[in-house]
Length: 508
Image (cartoon, rainbow, N blue to C red; front, side, top):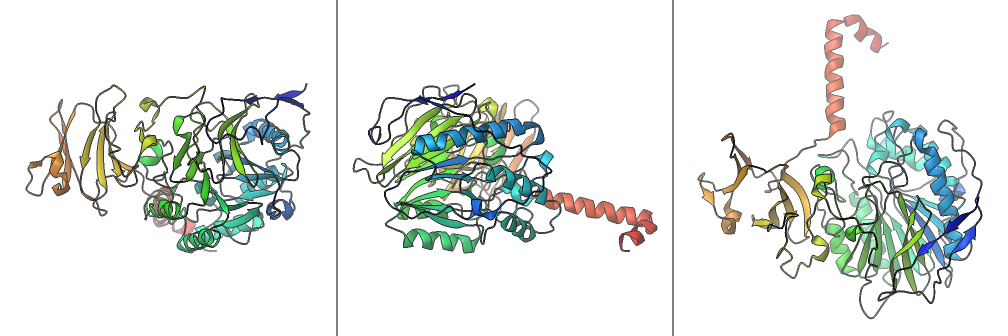
């Protein structure tokens, strides 16, 4: 049976390039793929991961962008099916195979595949090599939790060897575009959540220098997590609460947006990490001159029952960003523009089937898609029940929001959530408390030293003081890897004390 690649065509908006990139429905032949074995151990050639660059001008390129894979043995039919779809779509979009590429945004294995292990890396290498196109890879938080490795450095070195990489970050020329990949380097050594995506200092210096040295190039960035302040949709019950939502969430997360604001040639920034589909209004956010693009997943580890990937098509004149839906193999145009449109930044296409924000699903319904640091972006924000959000400015960039029965902390100038103070404020009175123990008004909350929660049903009172960062967010998830290793070490000591012979054998 033949498949049909259908392209949903919304009405052209400002920046659409329909005349340059005609979209047609055509019948495509299926490609027979070999089986990807989770125990193959086969060594794939390095060429798939080293032949990405092509500096010829005037060509058209198409990049298939894969979000978090989390390969699982029971779902390999879904991964192979999605791979076949992308392999059929890319040459059709590009007009041939020569300009086709694939970028994978990190998080290669699911827990049944031992994420971060050598076996996981080998399996992912086999799978990605099966696309038959040059592949760019970066690390995600789960790629550095291999149990067989004692340190993050050892784990990263195994990833580098497997995928034939000299460094964990890279820049690749593709005609008028410079593609940049950034990778996380920490899991065991993260200060708080092991799952924070951390870009090291050397990589940051390289990134900034590379952007500045290529000011005439159109730059497209790929990272596992997005930068704080980009305006993309986020899940507060997981990533904001655990402070692992943004790049370098716990250490100067604003440095990425400072680079974006200073370097207007960063045109596109793709990320994954949230396991959200591409059907939200905030799946694409345009700030400054940069479009930030959320990428979904192709397996079952999604949060909204949609399996989607991205396709980026571009030439010397401009670009188009598509969603490829892995349930029906359709393409949907989501964003298009020339590289330097005199009319301003690109405007995302209006979604025909938009998913709405639902706080019951853990969504952060904050309405920050229209954030402008030069305007009062907090004005007229409403909770889902229609009541106004209570904003409390607590000094500097510390901004508290009582919204949808939670107390969330934002970074004021970045217009972004940074953590959670209280997960459930129902039946609780919230007061800001000064150094003398008395209540201070919201307008004087910069003098507050604590937030008080008074349970109206039980009378119980809880006070949350400012933390070491002079903020109020709580650390809900300390580094779980470190805690587990400490517990295992303590259990081993206790076992050794009870059974001295076991201790002796362990050193033999």
